[in-house]
Image 1 (spheres, rainbow, N blue to C red):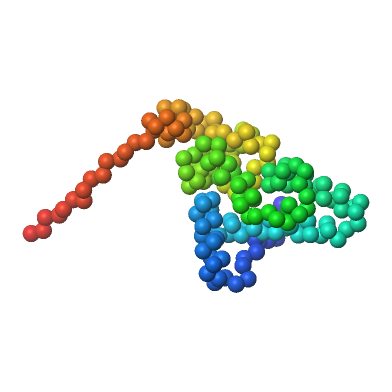
Image 2: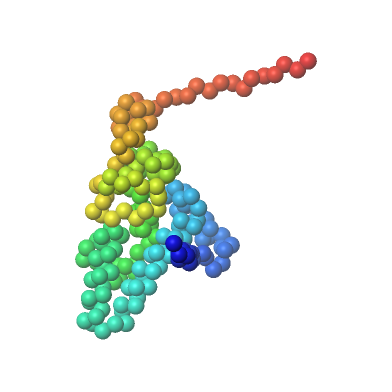
Length: 192
């Protein structure tokens, strides 16, 4: 069978771990995109940093080589939906981490209306209710290419396919799926 490859970290953690402004801004992004931990944010930031490093390295090449390599990089990012067709290297250098986070499967499920909240989107993915191109996906951090954007659906055996399911997004949009759970007062114990 052989030894598995040596696993490597897919993110770079911050150099100064206790900077209050950075921590506060990270918490806002983590809450907005429903990330499990800051590591998911750092993973997206590292991927974006790698794309920027590739764009910076292109600036030092000769004109003919630069144009060829720039086209390859822009085509890749355009397929992923991070940039639009016809952008330049300067646009890649100006990208923010939100442009990568918007392409995550968790965010796409919410934007397509398959989930009510960003946290419910994560739960649906991890509990195997979401399929991309008829393949069950369990990773909320999967970067969805543009060509697969309209192929995100519920799995065939998911109860959310049934329109009468109480948590079905189609029923929630109509306003009939919101069920109030009655709360009961805490019981008092008689002490003697």
